[in-house]
Length: 406
Ligand SMILES: *Cc1c(COP(=O)(O)O)cnc(C)c1O
Image 1 (tube, helix red, strand yellow):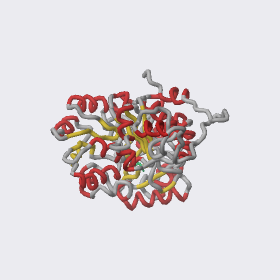
Image 2 (cartoon, protein in one colour):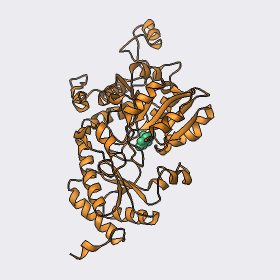
Image 3 (cartoon, helix red, strand yellow):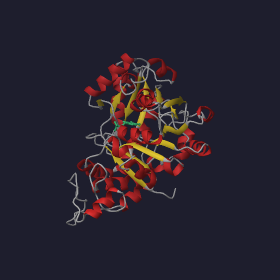
Image 4 (cartoon, helix red, strand yellow):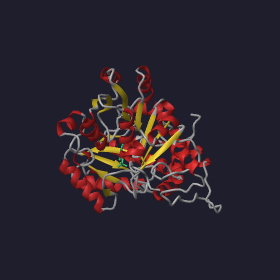
């Protein structure tokens, strides 16, 4: 793999105006011009390095955008006030009334609701398919189809999209492939595998401190500029602009992303392997039992592992709720949605993050009641974490308590 994202990010250093080792934060909504002519040219998009108004761009947002472009190996990147802000801008930019798109059926609940309910208002309809079945994806493409949408590692079922195959299919039909890579930064580089647009919810692993929401679109310079166009750009006109103070703090947190991802992956793999050995139904892309294990292995960067997310099916919603409450009491983590925090977070997707998906559709895609999604934290002693989690499961009768007598 010639594109080593972490090295490229580390080579990107911006200095503050007094030689500070971090860039100064652009604490302004608007910018002065020495001549009226320059202001006119900036409006027309003809002057590089000039700022007009911070909804369009600001130095702090551009720095963060450059780091994200380096992360994904794309020409350019724009940042947004949330992951949904990034996703909705891209979809609205690429689709007109009467258009159609093909999407994976296992996607983030908010994205699903946007496609299923909201974008309909603009007469854009969506086909939801099993993204791991290439023929099903191709069959859904019609002359009105404007894009293929999927998540590299899907939420919450952890299906792995074969991005190279999907990109080839998109290319064959002359449409872009849009990939949400929120679950697998550094582990998977979708643009290097042929994706045209890569989206992130920065809220999760990339920021990693669960203190804000933010998003990004990594793509060609042309596409990023089109989103910012003052007359036609969905990013510019829908207005989900990230604040400069936040952009600066996310950029600082990105400096440790490579270390965090390795630790999230190491801990998750350890827990997944051991819980599977104990007889639990564990889904984790690093287990050979995972349906898309080989696809994952073929397209990941082994240095960063299989990621920090795993699911465990504990049989019923009652079991899931009791276990999550007990684990929280024992400070093993928090009963909370979201992911990428230093502490383990767990939730039952069926009744939380995927509750936008109707019950019968949840069942059809294999999203069961007793499913717990874990975002594994950065615990220093994962063996201890494993023993403590196992004790919780034994006390609740989710695991047989044989070992307890020893
Ligand atoms: C959280 C999430 C989003 C939405 O991001 P926000 O920052 O909450 O708007 C989109 N896609 C995936 C895969 C997510 O996990």
